[in-house]
Amino acid sequence: MSTQLESKPAGVGSDAAELTYREAINAALEDELESDPAVILMGEDVATAGGVFKTNEGLSDRFGRERVRNTPICENGFVGVALGMAVTGMRPVVEIMFSDFLPTAGDAIVNELPKYRFMCGGQCEVPVTVRSIGGATGRFGTQHSATGESWYMALPGLKVATAGTPDSAYSVLRAAIRSNDPVVFFEHRGLYGRKGPVRRGDDNIAAVGDAAVLREGSDVTIVATLLMLDRALIAAEQLAENGVDAEVVELRWLRPLDTESVRRSVEKTGRLVVAEEQVHAAGWGATLISQFAMEGFEWKSRPRAVSLPDNLLIPYTPELEDTVVPSAERIADEVRAALK
Image (cartoon, rainbow, N blue to C red; front, side, top):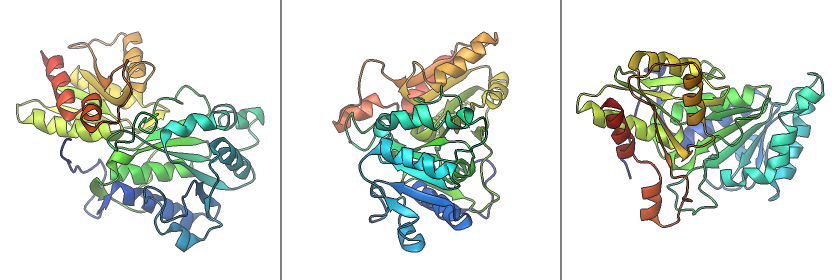
C-alpha cells in the first residue's frame, strides 16, 4: 500500500490543527450539533462506543441519546423517518455504515428525498444529510467495499459530496449538514487514520459545488476523489522527481459538478487524468470527459482514466484487493502515458 502523504489543502492556514480524517468527521458533527439544536445524528450503532468506525466518539455522552440515536437495521425505514423529521423542522444526519447498503434505502434516497420539495411546490425544505461510509483497503470483501460515489449523481434535487482529506471531511460535511437540500456525503474508511491540517470553525465551511486545487502544476491535471486523491498527491510527488509538474484537483462535489474549476486547470495543462475508485462507465470521470468532448476541447493528448476494472468485483484477499484498487503508481503511469 502506498505511503501517506500529508498535504496542506487550499485555504488552510497556520492556525490549523493536525487531525486525522476520523477526528475531522467527529469535529464537524460535534460543531454542527453544538451550533444548531435541530441537528441530530441517527444510524446503526452510532451511539454505541462511538460508532463502528469511532467517528462519533463522545457525541452521545455530550449531546445525549435524544440527539445521537441508534436505529434498527432498516435503512429505508430510518432514512424515511429522517425525511419526516426534516420537513417538520429538524436537520437529521443519517449514517449508513457501508455504502454498499445505500440501495436498501433506495426508495427513500431516490424517490422521496430529492423529489419532496418539488412535489410540495417548494413549500418544504429537506435538510437531510446521509453519511455513507465506503471504499476498499479494509479487506471487507465485495459486499462491503464499494465507494458508491457516482450512484446518485443523476438525481435532480439531490446533492452528492465526497471528502478526500481531513480538511475537506470537516468543511464539506459541515456544508452538507447546513444545506437545505438532501445531500449524500461519501467518506472513505481507508482514510480514517490519515492526518492533515484542519482549520476548525465557522470560517471553514466549504462552498457547495466547489472543487479545490490541492497542488498546482502546469503539465497535466489529475482529478480525483476520496482515497484516489491521497494517491494522486503521492503520484504527483513521484512525478515531480522526474520533472513532471502535475496539478491535482479534488472534486469534492459530484452534484453540482464543478466543471469550471476543472476546465480552468485543463486549459492550462492541456491534459487530463481522472482517478476514481469505481468503474469508469457512468461515473463522474466519464461525465467530465464527455462534457469537455461536447465542448470541442482541444487536448494535447487524449484524456485518460484510472479506475476499477469493469469486469471484476473487489476481492477479499489482500493481495488481490491491492491489485484491483488503483495505486499511486498506476496513476503516475497514466500521467506518463499522457505526456508521450
